[in-house]
Amino acid sequence: MKHGKKYNEIAKLVDRSAVYDPEEAIALVKKTAAAKFDETVEVHIRTGCDGRHAEQQIRGAVVLPNGTGKTVKVLVFAKGDKLAEAEAAGADYTGGEELIPKIQKDGWLDFDVVVATPDMMGVVGRLGKVLGPKGLMPNPKAGTVTMDVTKAVKDIKAGKIEYRLDKTNIVHVPVGKVSFTDEALLQNFSALMDAIVKARPSALKGQYLRSITLASTMGPGVKVNVLKF
Image 1 (spheres, rainbow, N blue to C red):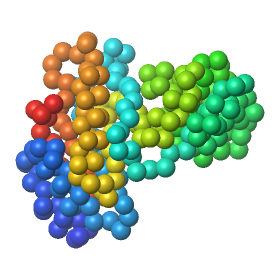
Image 2 (cartoon, helix red, strand yellow):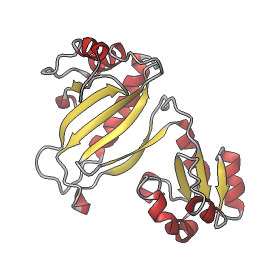
Image 3 (cartoon, rainbow, N blue to C red):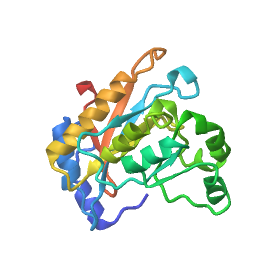
Image 4 (tube, rainbow, N blue to C red):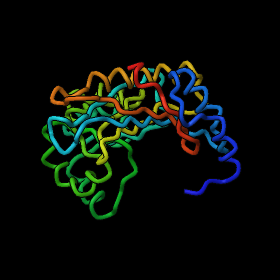
């Protein structure tokens, strides 16, 4: 991939052969973010897991103490009292069966997270082909299939993020924006890493965390010292 002159100049600030402590890495990521918008700070964690085996899958969610800096739109599938509960908690959209054609036929996807009560999963399951590939399918492990819709919606609005292995056994997650203070980013990063370390599959033999890279949306990657975790 060819980069522009500006990027190449900025990239020189990062020693590609070095690993940095989290504090140094965050400071460098902020220093090398030169886009004209408030870039997202992302973490990429290469694991020693083999996601083809169910017992080595990693999936869960964590509430970042300082949020993500992004406004998240939440859709809740529920019925009865739970609809009113979801609306009161701050859900952007609520509904049931009537939303199926809107999503399937009209291609309506103006939401970032889908929450569903367990009794609605039969309905939501029909949207698997649409929501699945976009990573929007509710999941009990991520806390998005639950009767406690108030907690689910409030956690998501407060900065709850999901993490999961991709096909190459890497976890990619946002931990805030470049405009955040170093301390806020460090707190978010630490909360994420605590959750990832706890999520280590018991079936895994050998090294769990192979590499950790921090980067802004348009900036170069900065390697973090794995031994810190």
